[in-house]
Structures are given as structure tokens and as C-alpha cells.
Image 1 (tube, rainbow, N blue to C red):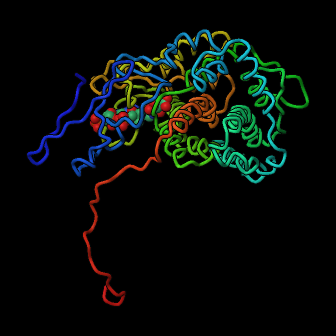
Image 2 (cartoon, rainbow, N blue to C red):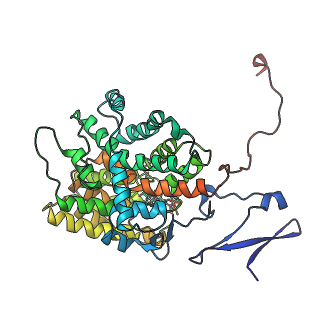
Image 3 (cartoon, protein in one colour):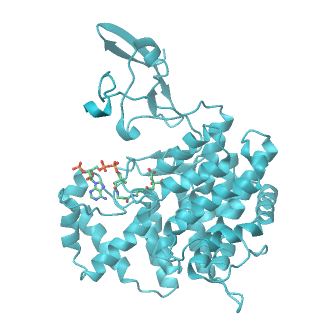
Length: 428
Ligand code: SDX
């Protein structure tokens, strides 16, 4: 006998089915709630609401577990390449060598951007935030590929758009940085792998050879894997709901980039470094800033701390924290911000305010310190998050589109003025 949920409303009993996932998560299926009862549910921030059934990523916030298509993030971060993980998320299985070679070569073929798009960059001020540039540029790609405007045109057309996005996002991201420096753009090198190519386009100059440090490539590969997907987070939910209107994939990913920009979401990695720099410049008095974070009358928050789902350590933060030590040691960098971050974490984790609210370091707390060590400027940190999250957004969009999900359109409870007649302006 399958489990059901019984709700009594106005003396009448209603029964709704319970669905159970492969990892024993349970939900009450309220698909017929309004039709049968006239009632809807309210859940600000969707803290208790499942938007979909998904086979892509499983996370357990209480246990600090994160799996992509069943594979533990710890194993993928240690053993896989980012492109391999992108294939896994998008197509559902780890690729064979032939599949990976084919996928890699197809991406390599599309790394160039239409030359006309270079003029777009010239219109941006040097101080333009790269997330604003990237979101616009990705949406603008749709204007160069009109056949992509119908996301359901054909499986081949859909896959071509997926490959173009994976291939061109690094190029556009690097060019946004080069443009902000008013440096010449560097073109992709087909002989380089994904991470090495990105670092080449970011930091090489036409006037001299540029060798990408393998330590840097390995660290970037790990960071991108750790950011690749995270089930129904804010930007992924944005991608799913924008995509559900049948908007093209470029516009849909552009919306995801905009949602990620917020400091409560992907923008937190930039905010963490700015916070650590503020504490460092203020003399490094960590206790003072932890007090501010706890003070309800103070708008200061401990950026990089807390999470909607993880009420235990974010498993990604654990891996990134260790990678921090490794990368800084190998590159012989002594970053005072790392010492402040570790002290901040220690003080917070021993403090009742944070413990009682299950506030732990999240993926953004240490990632910025590694990006700094790789030479990535602070304003590019959230762009790095978008680079990593792109395969996850694509995989979630593909699952939604191929699953034939309806357009996302939540309900509401109206709390405004009741019916009233128009009043002529001279009588108001
Ligand atoms: C990401 O969803 C995902 O999966 C996102 C992400 C992904 O991979 O896609 O994991 C990436 O976005 C990570 C989160 C990055 N953001 C930050 O680091 C910003 C700082 N953190 C917070 O603003 C906050 O913790 C959120 C936004 C992450 C979560 O917010 P919630 O779940 O809405 O929780 P809340 O704001 O209601 O906080 C609960 C309590 C509140 O206090 P009380 O009202 O109970 O007294 O905890 C407090 C908050 O004031 N609190 C914090 C805090 N985070 C929560 N207090 C101080 N510092 C903080 N960082």
C-alpha cells in the first residue's frame, strides 16, 4: 500500500499521494490540490517546495552529501576532467574515451566567436562588471544563430547549441576580462585543453609566450567540477523556469548568469574576498566582525557562510579548503586572507549563534582565495562560477525540455485592495 498524506479542510478529508525518490526523499504530490480543495500552498523562497523530479544531482544537506548522476563529488573532483563531468551531467553517463574525444573535438571546433561580436565589447566601459558583459554576450549569441531560436527544432540543432555554449563561454569570459584591461583579445588554441585554453586567453599576450602552470590548470579543473551543478538552486531554477517558456537556450543561460550574480548566490565568492580584505585592512580583528555578523541591527553578514540546504559542512568547501593549502604551497604564495578565513571559520564554528543556525562555510568561502592565487581578478570570480555551472544549467534545462514540463507559473494569495471604483483626478 503506497503512502499517502491526508489533509482535513472545512471538515472534509482529502488524500494526496506521496512520491519517493531513489535516495528515499519523500514529497507530497499536490498536483491536484487546488482542483480538489480550492486551496493552494504558500512557501516563501520555496524552502519546502520541490519544483520537479530530477535524475541529475543528489544532495543531502544534513549529511553533507553531493553526487552528480550517482558519482560522489569527492571522486569526480579527484579523478575526472571538467569536460568529462560536463558530459556526465548533460548526457547522463561517464563518456567512453571515443565519446570524450568526440565531445572535446566538437567543443574545440566552436571556441571562436563571430568577429562582429568584438565590436560589442568596445561599447562597454572599462569598469563594466564582467557578469553584466557575459549575460549580454550570451544572449546576443542567439542573434547570430537564428536557427537556435526554436529550442525544440531538432536533437541535432539542440546539441549544436549546447556545444556552442560550452565552447564560447570561456572565450567570451576571457575577452570580457581582456576588454576591461583594454588588452588585445587572445584567440583560443585548439591544442590546449579546456582549462589551459581559458588561462591562455585570460593571461597570454601577443607579444610573448605564456606557459600555463600545470598546478593552476589542475586547480581550475577541480574548482569547475565542484561548481558544475547543485540541483534546484536559485540560478538553476531560473534556467528551468525561463526555459519552460520555450525561450531559446542562449536567452535561458543568460538569465541563469544574471541570477547567479547576486551576492546571496554566486556573487558571494567576490563578496567573501571583499569581506576578508575589509577585515584585513581593519587590523584583522575577527571577533569584532563575527559580533557584527550576529548583530540583527547590523547589515553585515559573514559572506561564504550558511546555506539553504547544507545544515552541515558543504562537501565542496571541504575539498576547496584543502585545495587552498595545496595550491598556495605549490605556488609559494602566502596570502594573509587565507589565515583570516581560517580564523573566521574557527571562531564562527565555535559560536552558538552559528552553531544553532547550522551555519557552515559554503562553496564560496574558500574558492576566492584559490582564484586569487591563480591570478584571477576579484570581479571575475562569479564569472568562474558561471563557467563551472554551465554544464549543470544545460543538463537541467535539457531534462526539463525533454521531460515536456509545463511552463512554470506559480500561484499567489492576493493581499491588496478589494474592489473599488475609479475616482476622477479632480476628486482625489
Ligand atoms: C550559493 O542553493 C544553492 O545550492 C546555492 C549554491 C550553489 O551551488 O548553487 O550552493 C551556491 O549560493 C552558496 C551561498 C552563497 N551565499 C552566501 O555565502 C551569502 C551569505 N549566506 C546567506 O545570506 C544565507 O546563508 C543564504 C542566502 C546562503 C541562505 O539563506 P536562507 O536559507 O534564506 O537562510 P536565512 O537567510 O533565513 O538565515 C537563517 C538565519 C537567519 O537568522 P535568524 O532570522 O534565524 O535570526 O541564519 C542567519 C540569518 O540572519 N544567517 C546568517 C548568515 N546566513 C544566515 N547570519 C550571518 N551570516 C550569514 N552568512
